[in-house]
Image (cartoon, rainbow over all chains, first blue to last red; front, top):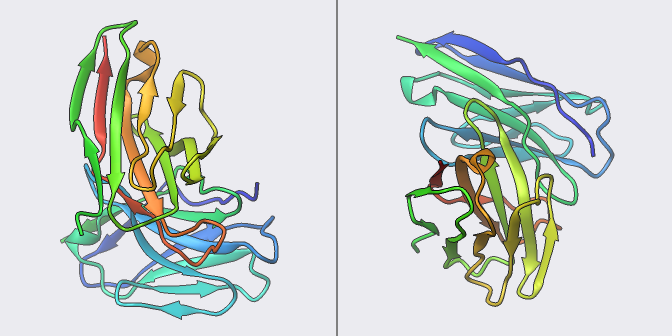
Length: 107
Length: 115
């Protein structure tokens, strides 16, 4: 299974943009890139997904490198409620989580 | 829609006891799965099902059984609880995993402690 690599933790200031990176150098041509986040004491929730093109939704933007070996989740204006663990996942036959990036947002 | 529901929210078991964690969804989703999350760790896939009557193993299936007799329900059975199974258990569902555009919906979790 293709694996992803994310930094263990990142910090951001409230109201500033946050760029969360993910490396997936062994991605195959048909693997979708999904991002989920897990707020404290809750189950994970879907954030965004993409295949080749950059994607935007109400929660975030996803920028995918041209060679698809990396991607970046962009939160345009971080709020305190965005403090969570963010997971970058490649969907193959099942969905497996890595350790994710713990985002801390400072007021 | 209630989404994905899990019962109980909390459970304490003694070593060797058995129990069933319940999971139900009302979204007519074909794909359902169980994960466990140990403190400070990411989620690990235990078992999954692509439809009624079909189940398969994930990363950490030992000590757990599943069955899928209906589309709505996907119970997880602990056969003989061990302290190593102390964890938070999450159930999830989606329309289909084979179509990778579908998102998974997660339940609120069951916090299990085995003493």
